[in-house]
Amino acid sequence: MPPRRPDAGRGARPASIPGWRRRIYPDLPGIGRTPAPPSIADADDVLLVGHSAGAYYAQALAHRITSRVAGLALVCPLLPSTHDVPAHVPVIADNALGDAEFRDYFVVQTPAMLARYEQFVAPAAALVDAAAMERIGQRWELTTPAGETCAGPVLLVAGRQDATVGWAATVELLEVYPGATLAVLDGAGHALPHEQPGVLAALVQDWLRRVATARSGDPPGR
Image 1 (cartoon, rainbow, N blue to C red):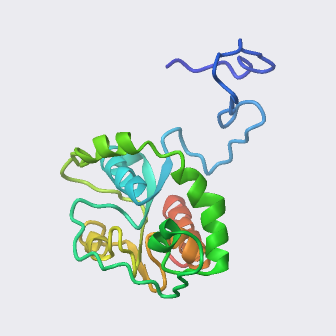
Image 2: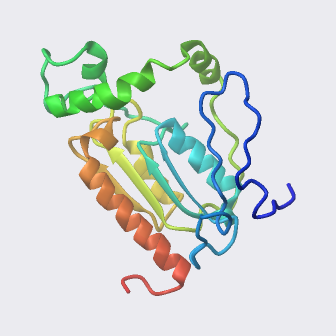
């Protein structure tokens, strides 16, 4: 696609598109009011982050565009090699709290987690196309190119009580990414981003620091 002139979209009001409720037109770095700091070396540098199936797709994409990926973070990744998945055993159980879907997904069953479930998880679950998921689930595995993997810093995070994908296969990814940081969090299931948000945030911040260090060329720890 040819480059756009910096002023090509300024003040433009495209014709209304039937059925579209909201349109967002972000300016690219260096265009409009979007800054382009020196940390943006080129148009190809990306960080890939994914949870569950999203982590699997992020990993596959990283293998396809290795030279463009500055860092990869996989949280509770769904993997073809998933094995030894534990049974669902809540670490804090309350059978009177929430509905069955909440209790079957969260291993930390507290009012705070129920609030997060009702605010974030339930609305998204209501939009799931079950028939489409069933169809895609029949052939969900991707072909990963052999050879080089992500050269940038990698973060691997799993929940010790994850009854959806387990944690054993995530640990084995250390063989794929020898320089990765691995964390298996107790007190977290597949809803780890909700159940251990503080720990996850700290791990992500450390990963971002490692990415910045790798990109700057400075020795680790500086």
